[in-house]
Amino acid sequence: MITKKSPLILDSFNILNSKCEIIHSDDSSIDLLENTKSMPVDIDFSIASNEDDSILVFTKVEINNADNPLPGYSIFAEGVGLFHFEASLTEDEKKQLVNSSINICITNLRSYINTITSFYILGRFSFHAVDMPALLKSKADSINRDVNTDK
Image: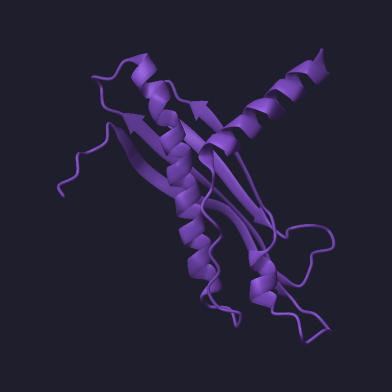
């Protein structure tokens, strides 16, 4: 099937910060990779508009990145995607494409994490597919809580 080029154009994606380490356990019965797969994946993002009509999408993924992490991988990765839109788009069309830019950045971070963990003794780790409508709702709820708390 021949694909159609998206009017959302990814100019670049860069890693801003990352950390990956293995947290060992004295209990040899714990499968560290499987233990990591059962851990929650914390994703956050923010979007900034530039004067040239491009957008920056800052995204971070944290897995077991706590003060006292559990056995398995402890991962933090943060990146930024720079996007622009084809000139012919209306503002409404651009707004509809912003969610795709978030998904693209999450996918890039997933790939980065998969690549860096491939060099560790536990092997490759890739986190689960993300329910984007639930993530976007959670972000909207978080923003609304922050706005209401500031009043």
